[in-house]
Image 1 (cartoon, helix red, strand yellow):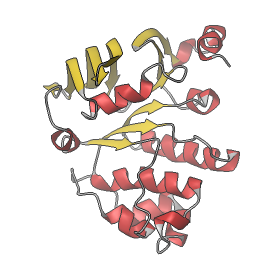
Image 2 (tube, helix red, strand yellow):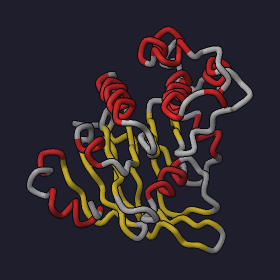
Image 3 (cartoon, helix red, strand yellow):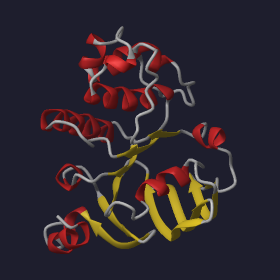
Length: 234
């Protein structure tokens, strides 16, 4: 039987007085890739931030490998093997690409070596001595993803990694994410590009008004595509 790696139950979150998530429920088995789909403002990014403890307040349950983390500080959650790749990427502009890669501490023994990272992202090897501010948007996105792979995180939270990228770079990232799934990583992906997400995910969770309102398995995708398009407005 599949082992549940992440289980979210009745999750409520707030930014200040703003109540964003209203009882969100979903789970991810080890080695699965799932997406959180929905329109802008539905609460998808907040769900990822809540998992790693970056919201002002949260109630309910977030369990990682059966361990409750709802009251844990972000640095403790990260050390349980969670890697968060935010939409804004968080590249340090004054550091080189390689210095950015080496900056985060390791949280597990399974982190990729620099050689493995450069094999997956040859563009980063070519630009390894370039300052973060001189990297293209696509190179910065590859760097943001590669940085959490070096730490040894086994649960990857990826927020809009294709946002604003050219189709060739989107295709390259798709191959990288598929490769990570094949390697056994567990991935939760917030993605506006449904065509990109549909090819990769085992399951799609549709988010609306801070709740999961529909669950679509990969095998059901063809039969429920019209419903997905209606929710997503595509």
